[in-house]
Image 1 (cartoon, rainbow, N blue to C red):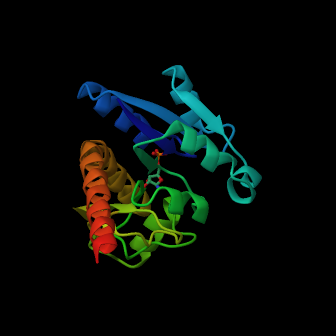
Image 2: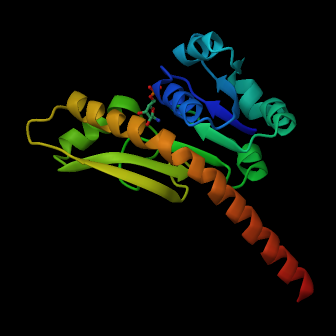
Length: 206
Ligand code: GRF
């Protein structure tokens, strides 16, 4: 049984697609859905599926080890940010190296960073008259949208596409690729852990 902690603060459409897809694939996963918004739709949707949820505030997240300690005892195989806008604090990033992934609605490294979320991203892409956009799955580090890219999917944009059209195309890509890609990250996490172990072993021998 794998365990996934999902951080989300929006409608949770990506979170639900993940849960639905892994369920259809008969991959046994237990979830914990965490949100910094008490009334986030994602919490309601998760509760309807009898999934454990947790609301936390800024103090819990940034000034205490509350969330870190909860996650340490939960022991997730993966932490997934799916529409979560707060910067992940260093204590979490350090404790779960290469285990936290985020989905971003643009082709990073372009259109990422502080303030680049939701429609802001698509409006900026629209104003730049880009001929393509897409989604990026990347590891999370202490900076907004700067962790290593793991996967990207692109869509072409037409001159007549509005920012809303771009948002629609990108979300469609996210729903199509994120859930399918996710099981592969279990493998990457295992591989990275193994490589780290081998490096430490060799370092001790030298
Ligand atoms: C997605 O576009 C995702 O890329 C971004 O936030 C949005 C979340 O949408 N990080 P939803 O809550 O999954 O519907």
